[in-house]
Image: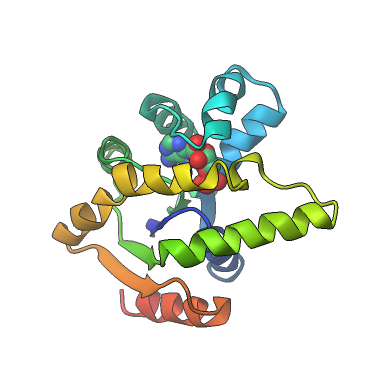
Length: 194
Ligand code: AMP
């Protein structure tokens, strides 16, 4: 099964992806995590991506498509994957279709996390302040001066995918502002119905 979790940064996609990986054996592919790993390892891709990510902009399509294309060839993705933070543009969505078709697979479902921007900004700002006060590291792009740009990029570049996948009959929307456990149950119900 190939599943996309679609929604703005901070909507809870990563949390649900980890739950799904643990319970359903679906491999979570988070391009954000892979890019952060590339930065930590100081690879050429990491060096290219760092300043872009620090600003809250999107890394070029060809870079993230290349990362996903490579990753899909690994054995743990043989039966499909759970895409978290990818695709973020229609070019990435088209590339994913082609990659899956080349593997004799298809996309089964896209789950959209609908959230309120104002509440999201409040939540991320509060979390960053609490973490900072507790001496915990705060992701550079979760800072209040960067997060709104990530949200703006989501609305400009990624939100059009909602209509894109809606037209293909693949979209299911859930209220991402509900408690983690409620969101988890709603996703489970969607997957049961596939
Ligand atoms: P995330 O952890 O998914 O919020 O991603 C963190 C940052 O990594 C984003 O703000 C982008 O700069 C970059 N990034 C992650 N995934 C993608 C993608 N599919 N396309 C472009 N940039 C991405």
